Figure 1 (cartoon, rainbow, N blue to C red):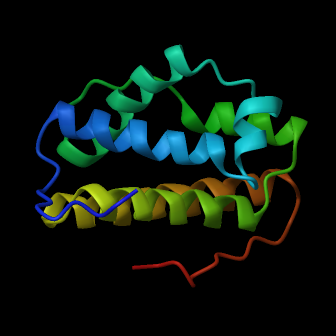
Figure 2: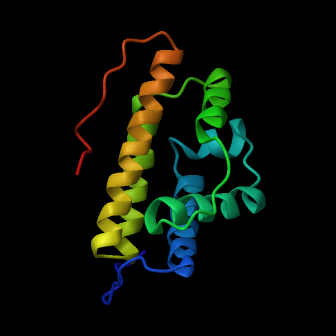
Length: 142
């Protein structure tokens, strides 16, 4: 994928859908985390993507459309397959890459920061669930 020459900021539902679609295409094709989504969680993408549009529209643009409990879903997944720091690092790396390929601006930067904070908090809570002494990986902080 080539970086768009005229990137704009994330300002609309259509922008969110572009970001989510490009990001989750990368996730599905990724050799480290793709199998977690495709084979272990068996994600139904036709159902999952619209939820992710709502989720990211809520956290990036502040439009209150998302209903759900992402932590509960990830706790259940972690019981099937232990999620590790490298999984969260890859998720963040792919998210940042897809934001940067498609967008630039204040909301794009905020999207990366918010996604990072969410992933870090999720990893922390999963580590506690696993009985681990949680260590937050700061190397991918913006």
